[in-house]
Length: 105
Image 1 (cartoon, rainbow, N blue to C red):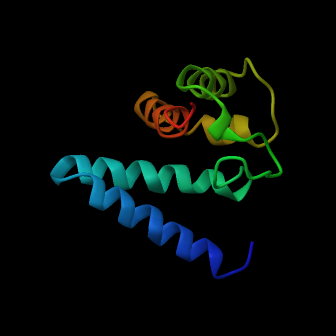
Image 2: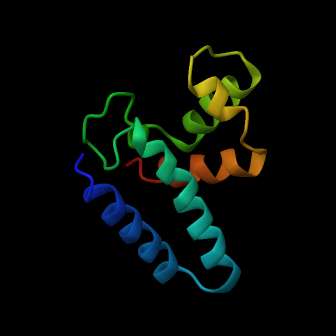
């Protein structure tokens, strides 16, 4: 990914989230977009794009939630994801699961 692609993608994501919601919902949508944006460092940023790690866009809401919760509890082992998931609140896991899982056909 070029150095220009990441800031442009983040700006577009934030603008889309802001345009799609008002007031507190806008703040929530922007926070969720920022939270999800950190996933793009390893996972594909768009549906069908092959990344280094699994394509989150192919998982259901339940699968994303279950995997993050498993990483958080230590029930699923991974060098990096266990550390990342341990910092998420239940609400953040729910937000991420809805963000990526709702894209599943």
